[in-house]
Amino acid sequence: MADSADPMAFTTEALLATTRVSLRDAATHYLAITRACVELAARRADPSEVELIRARVHRAHGGDLRMWRRIVDDAVIELAALSQSARLTREQMRLQAELSPFFALIDQDEAEQRRRLEAMDSILNAVAEADASRAGNLVADAVAHDVTWLIDHRAELEAQ
Image 1 (tube, rainbow, N blue to C red):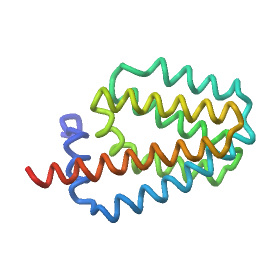
Image 2: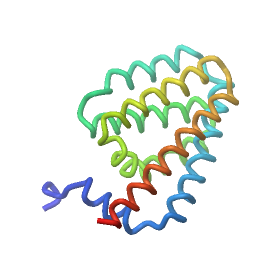
Image 3: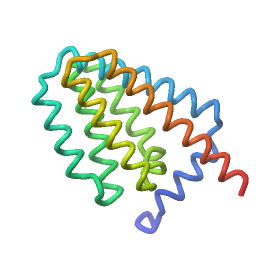
Image 4: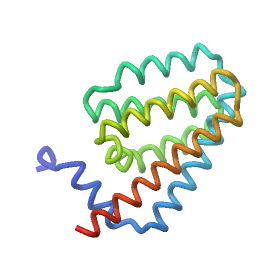
């Protein structure tokens, strides 16, 4: 039975069951942790570590959606690990597990997947260049885009 379950259908149902307030709250929490991680990573990471993350993300782009999401989730967690904060990294891991299914809804769209790759590249550039402020602002832009997309998608689904 579990093999025949459709994860996207399950996630769509979960999105419909989640209020806009809850989505915004989850995004705020995700932003706070992710921003702290990338800002610390920008201060502490070696650029060569950042390039390894970039190479994996680029290899995964354009492939299977499940593989893409796994690699992007891993990349975000690896960035968190570059912060050298075990607590922040653990919280980032928990948040990725919670929110990745929603991000997968977004990434079903090829243009959105391309946008995510470009956003990730920009964030990685800022981290590699030790520009903590820019890295944090880029994360804020990406999270704002994602939560707006999810809220709009939820409204479209409710209207059907």
